[in-house]
Image 1: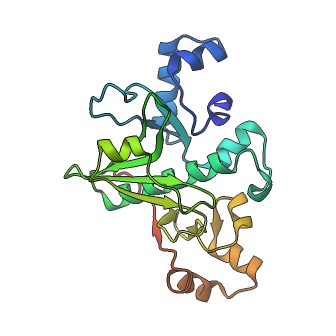
Image 2: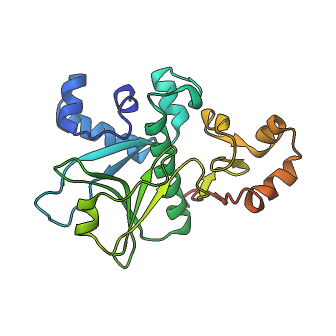
Length: 231
């Protein structure tokens, strides 16, 4: 788990992970599979339409709860001070929240990343039920980033959007808990998951009014996560 935590958002393979921790590739694959079934990590596959220049077997691994990831590394440095990790943490956060949103909607959208052999990359690629492609790049500040030329040439009909800390997008958390992103202060991201009441106290704000204003004034839409499975 500690090895996975140190490599969020990086390309990995079961064989390379096994070499680093002294386990066989099948054993690592089983362990990662158990972690994924337990909703601790999410394995993101690489998207390919059989172009010879695209990677096909690579994977990226993200944590559903960044608090667990930080605990595994015993690293609770505030987000705004984590210069070496901020990009990876932000990418992890965005991808997992998009995953939760699609599961809550119960649609058939599939999530991938994309990368070719020239190391051009798209952080998140969503494939809708009708086959349409929606690409997302996770950046802390650079909202002017463009889709890689190789991706745009192979998939000219795909949409492309840059998600930054200022982008109003869909996030979720459990019950009354909310994940506060977008135009809410960066400092709250260091705790990752905060209740309305807790953040309201920090901002010296009425909790009920704060919850309502999240969807109105800051344009952050807050949706619940996927309900517990029946049975």
